[in-house]
Image 1 (spheres, helix red, strand yellow):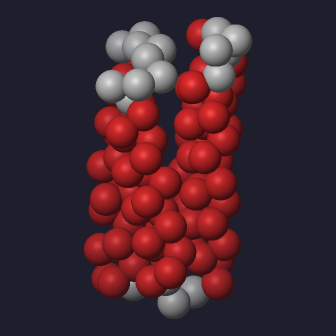
Image 2 (image 1 turned 120 degrees about the vertical axis):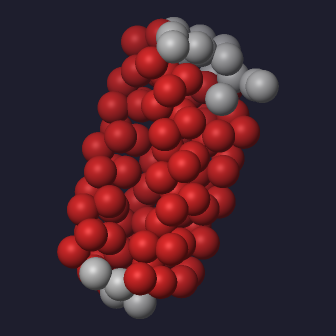
Length: 105
């Protein structure tokens, strides 16, 4: 799962740099920070399943805020840069749904 989280962090950072609208940039920055926090939770040796699910809930909320902001932007370039964000997020979501709790792939 850590590689998916790293991809999410990198792709949201790229979106932040490329986005033309302030709302998208700020939400992408927030998602980058949330992804970092989620990654830290995954590698923390005392993190249990509840910790991981709570951190994922925060990550999911932030992702959905960004998704909504991208939709409101109606900008094809922003949507293009958002696609890898979505791909990485959905990979994490699938792994969470399967109940995986691996800190490292």
